[in-house]
Length: 118
Image (cartoon, rainbow, N blue to C red; front, side, top):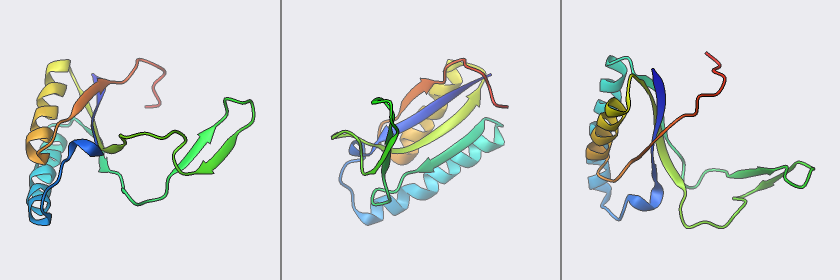
């Protein structure tokens, strides 16, 4: 089994009405329920656009924690899902279902094979 990150940048969402967004919520929740039922669920969640943002940087040799993003960027992570699946094909399938439910693109990346905490 391998863990895959399925995610989107907030800018990919596009402009939609409040009604449109409300209609997508149940569709996305149904996909998450399907992932759970398949035993592939690790985590899923969306990030608050207006929530607090902190940056930690130790590249100077001294840790500095500041408010706000460290670097100016035009893209930021909007939400993510982590699945634990047998193969890339299955990760692609879940990404496709999430993309259809949400109505915007998703990217998929496999987690590296480092020491596992579980």
